[in-house]
Length: 544
Image 1 (cartoon, rainbow, N blue to C red):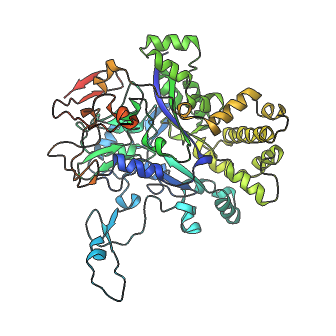
Image 2 (image 1 turned 60 degrees about the vertical axis):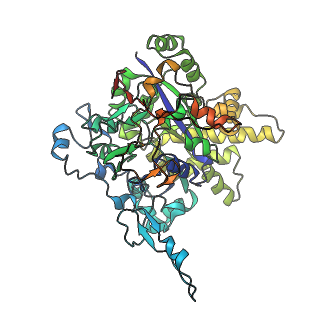
Image 3 (image 1 turned 180 degrees about the vertical axis):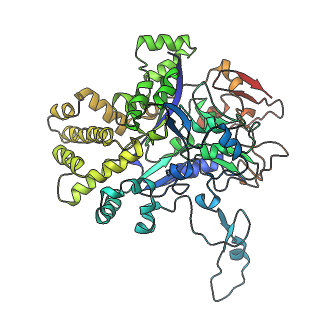
């Protein structure tokens, strides 16, 4: 057993209202620069819908992730020889139109137009070519089923179950069970993007499992873009480098949550640590039956309360406070203990580390519309058993098409609602409710506290990086360019506002001090001596 730590996230989809605050704040923090106008490290998709980029879940077309061939894991895009043959002409790359062509408006027309009878119009201008354009798509075009029957049937997940339902039922499903799905990089245990990179620029940090891009080594081959089945690696057309979600590692290293988590108005995100057995990752991802992938992934996650696991973690140089953080981890509780959080598309075999609590609210709303009690346990269980379409859709998203774990998760959530309603109404709690889903009263109440009323420090259990490793964590191939030849025309305050400042210019704890202090302190930046170090999953450190 080789114990490693993995930073992970859980999102409670019942709480997402589709406000896109997480997307906007992430955009301002990481991709508010020239060359990445179309890039959204965090985006919120409406389901059913095509997603971003369009139909990214159709791996028959995009060939992302892994497949099992003769009992061994193989990249779906092909081996080294095939990728070498396609290195200058990759047919599996999404085009800009699959994302969208970013635009701005001719605002000067509004400011300089003379007085007249008609109101001036600000024409949309392409941020790529600078020419007039017609807006036909964007990152959130599917919001609230924009276009309804014209767009939603193109959802690859919905297409896989179309033979099981009629058009009438399908459209009823879309109207009744629309929900939002926030997406970021999965920071997988078995990342296909890392395996696809010919130059070795993609790597997974050994400290916390965050997947990053070494900008110095990246040569812009874009094999990582096609290799990622979630399409969460992007190409900066200004610098010719790949960029992706960094899980806000400068904040994580000082014990602060990601920007998307910090600014989420629904408080639906949880961040914490998993301890996992690194020696079993390949075997878990190689299981033949896709329905076994979820259990194989759960088996990788080690019990941090097990004395043997703790001893093995200390042997593998995991700090004591990190072991304690793993014991208090909300993501471990939701995924492994309560079994209500599920990974996104485990059939891609990348072992994703962003998990989701499936939405129960649409089922409750559907019951209320029929005049039934939406919080009654019997009504809820009956609805879950009869409304097979939403469970099948969720199963295609989270369990490789197996409805069993999805149904079990929804039944636990339904039991929690019914049990807590009795308590809140002053009734005697019914122990038969948690017993019906294989839980006891104390465990069910703890799950309620974590999902409903958990405090900040309970939702985000993030251990700090150690001072002795701070230098190893500096700069880490940050996606933000620096220097006279960076090719970027934007800076920390938006377009053409100056040049970005490297993360490592600040002292190790300056970020947290600046964001938590009650006194305004002038920022003192070092003018030179910025080191660029990269610590890879092997544990070796290289400097440039």
